[in-house]
Length: 144
Figure 1: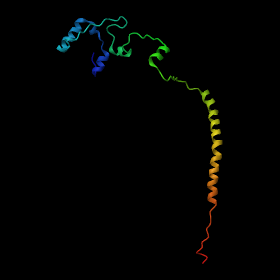
Figure 2: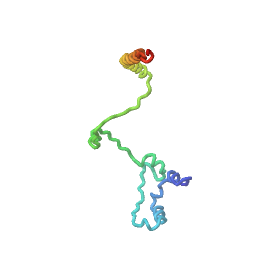
Figure 3: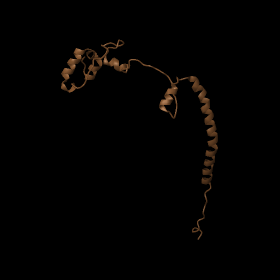
Figure 4: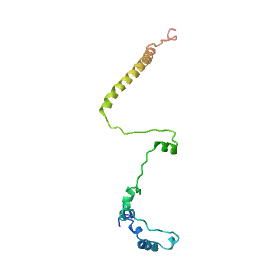
């Protein structure tokens, strides 16, 4: 295959030459003497995918032929020795949740303000009271 970039050509090509001994020998002879000591074997055909499966398809399936799913929380906890366990989930937007949350927020705000407002008013009163009490000191030099 060909492409603008070598990686594109690789992704669109298949590995069918690796299933044929003659083609594989031709590739090895063109590479040169450096691979003489490496034993290269012809791939065995998997009936599930075939020889003309593209490299992109192999990557998409993560080069896994079969997923064997075995859910065992006991085995997981034995192997991982987890010290902390948590989970998360995605919840859809519900208007009912907002309607029930608003009174909670209002109630909390009412309690906080009922505790803070008397304290703030007391501070403002003290500041105002101190400003109004100006001490007048008589000028001694003006009397003489």
